Length: 140
Image (tube, rainbow, N blue to C red; front, side, top):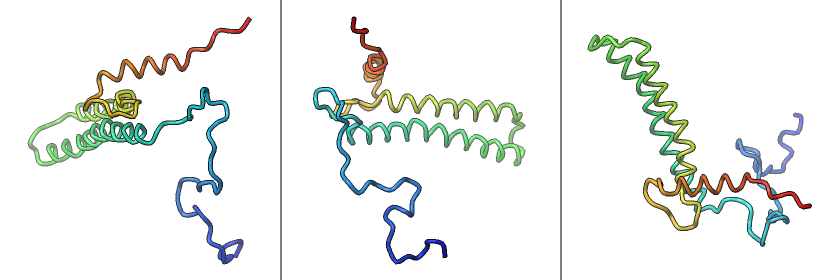
């Protein structure tokens, strides 16, 4: 049967994500000052929550605008032009796209959680992004 049912259980073969490595992963050897590369789990979870809310709510509203428009027009309550539905849903989807950046940039990148909306973190995090893209001066 071409490799199926060989009696051994295959680890990680049932999902979409690639299987986890069997040996422990070491931090990158080029990390400056012994710092770990990557995002700490607390910060990653905070970013994920903010992104989910900042993109999920506008996206659901964008889809709901089609449903509401259909119900209103089909019951004869209002005559909504299709372009109004298109603009409304497009605006919500665009807001969801902006919410993706907002969710990442408004989260506190420190271990301590920031404020509820995180507006004060946006400037700090944009500065961090800019400084990470600056190249060090060439050695002469």
